[in-house]
Length: 424
Ligand code: GLC
Image (tube, rainbow, N blue to C red; front, side, top):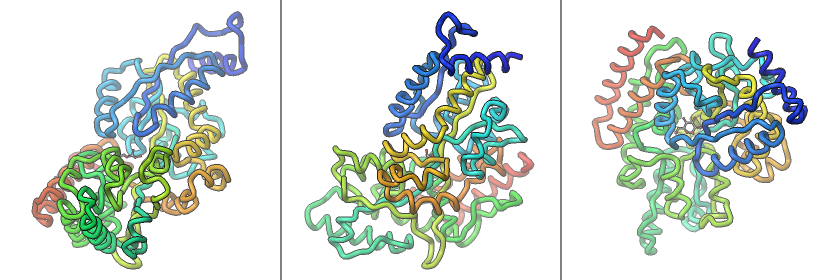
């Protein structure tokens, strides 16, 4: 009953019912948005438009940049069953972990889910309930300095070994020319979810699998994983500054965008910022799929992205769901793509001339996105964060100098124990 009454209320508001005709008491929603790059501004603009259309007031709650810190905040708030958050921006890997705290959105979305990548809708469907709607999708990509590669006579790399060689040569050549602060490669090396993404990309692209296989068995302890992480460890203090052990997305972008790195691993959002009017590297940047482990091997950009969910403890689920439907619509996703290169979750937008004009590399991203490497979050379900933190801690230790083979074996032992307890 409450749900239906709420839905009717929002319908009346969306149809522009005047104050005298309002069917519900004034509602104020709150939405938790990220603030990485221009995220917060984009969120505020879109929410502002919806407020004007509907007359519903929305409070924006900012959340920490690190996906890991954001999860801790949500777990704390949802665990307390607070009604202080109605709409939450959740990471693609959290659907299984947070499902029990989230509202089933299916009754509110009509045919909207059919317009999104089916794999993302499947990701958000937990035990038959649609617990979130995709807002934007992400895939790890390699940014490079076109001008510096051209000056030193290199083509963009296809393998990690080539990337390593080029990064070292350009770093050395440029330093000789007096550019003392130039580094070859920056990535996300801090101990958090971002490092899990990087580690999985290295391991999977060397043919080392995705930590668990399809049956949930732990597969990470293998020669290809050792090879991948040995190469990655060799970067730290060589082509990458030691500080990379504490870099998240924005720290890496800071170094690259000020002109101090040849290559950067990041998500597509960094493109619009690198191309911004005030960016020192504007016009000098190329974006390509991440390198493969071996010639002819696969590139393994990890699937990322953020979705919108409604808290089960919201007092206004119908209004909150209406806001989610508006924000995740094709029109809003197009606006975000054109203005700030956020990848739509609506495949039709990858053929949209304005989207492609603003983001020439999007046409080449459709395949990497469709074949992106998924983190093992569906298999691990509620235990994903534990699995991921074991992986990022082991990877961080290896990047900081721990013996590769022994540390991967210890990781596999921890994960097998976790599997036994979690029964996945
Ligand atoms: C990006 C991705 C997200 C990932 C995070 C890791 O925000 O969209 O899926 O977990 O980076 O730092």
